Image 1: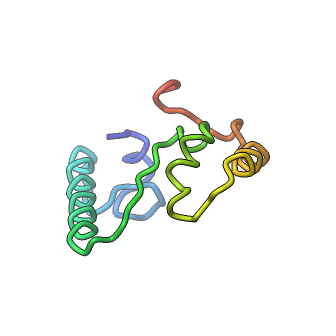
Image 2: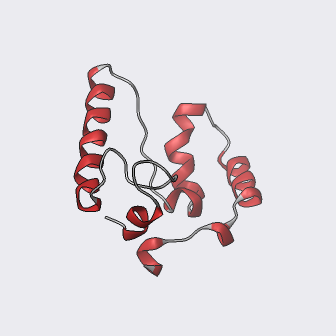
Image 3: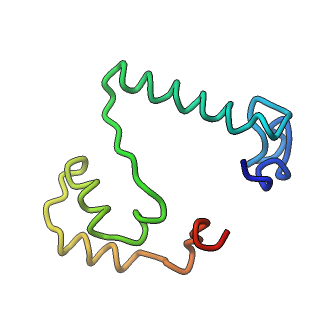
Amino acid sequence: MSSYRAQAGSLNQVPGGLWDTTVAEEQEEILAGKLYRLIYFLTLYRVPVTFLHFPTLADDADYLFEKLKGIFGIGNRKNFERVFNDIRRGDLIHDFDKHG
């Protein structure tokens, strides 16, 4: 559980604060339960879902193309890669796994 999230606020007073708890140590378990319920109902009602890994989706045009081509009917990989490279802003991406 990120200490930043706990410090950002409590009782939903600040975006990024604790959700449905006032105890920071409980936040991870509460969020895990919410995610479980979300995925449960998505699968129960057969809602198609695509998970995208960050920062891979912002760094790897091939990865993003493969994930999105069936959803959006994207057929031209070269055009997708050109647009991806034109709009990608690597300077705005922070990789928490690499930088802590």
